[in-house]
Image 1 (cartoon, rainbow, N blue to C red):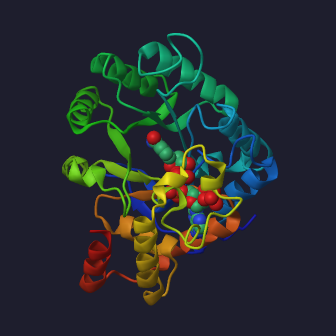
Image 2: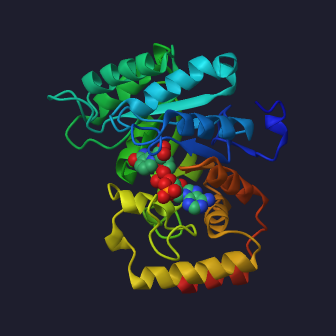
Length: 326
Ligand SMILES: NC(=O)c1ccc[n+]([C@@H]2O[C@H](COP(=O)([O-])OP(=O)(O)OC[C@H]3O[C@@H](n4cnc5c(N)ncnc54)[C@H](OP(=O)(O)O)[C@@H]3O)[C@@H](O)[C@H]2O)c1
C-alpha cells in the first residue's frame, strides 16, 4: 500500500460545523461490491481509493446483490487489508429501504433501524460505524420515533454521527431541531445533486444546510455514468446501462446525447474529461462537502480523483453549461 496516501493530492473539507473532515471525493459501494463483481475487483477499488487519500466509504444495509453483500465484502477487506487502519477510515451505512421479509424489514421505525444497524455491524465486523443514516423519509412513522432512535444509537456508541438521506425539507428542519435539542448534531445530508438534477438546490435543501452549518454529500454525481464518456458512442457491453437494473436505456434519448456531447466539448476545452468537469461542478457549489462516486474500475476512480485539479469555472463556461442544459 502507498505510504504517501495523504500526500498525493486528496483534499479534505470540513463537514459543516463539526470536527469531521471528509475527502472531497468519497467512494460509494452501491454497485460493484455485490455478487455480480469478482471480489478482487471490489478489493482493488477500495485499496486504490485508500491509497489515494479516500478515507470515507459509503455503504447501506441493502447494497449488493445479495442485500448485505457490500457490507460483507467491506468487512473482509477491513479484516484482511485495513485492520491496522480503522482509525483512518470514516465508514457510513444506512437503513430504511427493504432489507428483510416481514413488517420490520424496512422503513424508519426504531425496530428496523436498531436491528438493521446491529446486522450491519456484524457483517462488517465493526463495533461502531462512523456515520449512520436514515436512508429515506418515512411518512408513516412518527418523526420523533425515528429521531430519538438516532439519538439513542449515538448515545449507545453504535454510530459516532448520524445523517439523513433524501428527506424533504420540512422533515429535515424537524430533524435538525430535534437532534440539536438532544445534544446530537445532524452531521450531513445525502442527496442527488448533479448537472442533470438540481433537486436539493431547487427545493431549498442546500440553502438550509448552509444556514445550519450541516454538511452535504452528493450521491450519483455522475448520474450513474451518464455524465462521463461512457455512453457518448453507444452502450458498452460492460456498462451499468447494459446491466439494466438501475440505469435504463430509455433515459439516453437523442436530446440528452446531444447535450452530453456538448458538455464533453466544454470539458475538453477546459483540459479535462466530462466526468472530471461534472464532479468539479458539484464541488463548486459552496454547500457541497464531498462527491460520492461509484466506479467499476480503479482507472475510473483515479480519473475522478483528478477532478480536484480542475481549473476554476469561468462565468462564461458556467453560462455555456446552463445554455446546453436549458
Ligand atoms: N442515498 C441514496 O439513496 C443513494 C442512492 C444512490 C447512490 N448512493 C450512493 O452514491 C454512490 C455513488 O452512486 P453511483 O454509483 O450511482 O455514482 P456515479 O458516480 O454517478 O456513477 C457511477 C458509475 O459511473 C461510471 N463512471 C464512474 N466514473 C467514471 C469515469 N471516470 N469514466 C467513465 N465512467 C465512469 C461507472 O459506470 P459503469 O459501471 O458502467 O462503468 C460507475 O459505476 C453509491 O455507491 C452510494 O454509496 C446513495
